[in-house]
Length: 110
Image 1 (tube, helix red, strand yellow):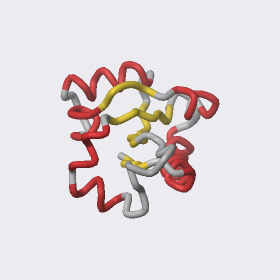
Image 2 (tube, rainbow, N blue to C red):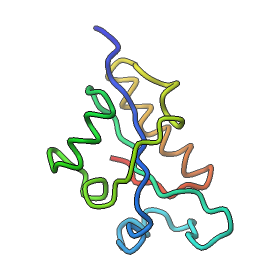
Image 3 (tube, rainbow, N blue to C red):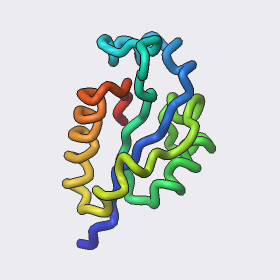
């Protein structure tokens, strides 16, 4: 089986912080803290991440936060990890979300 799955990271508009579920998922994040890192969405896909982002924005199998608040992909956070087999991408989606949250990002993982 070809390695054609990807993890990806989307920068979210700071207004996503107004969503209570997003805030509850990130109880230690302070958007007002000096040097606060961005709020992001972490996902995995069998598509090219650019195409997957476009599909989110178009409402096709979209995550609600990406559709409403997605700004752009942040390839510097994931490009070196791709591509990979499906099972590895599933695990890496979780791992990357954990790593980013530990680094200080507010994260929604899909």
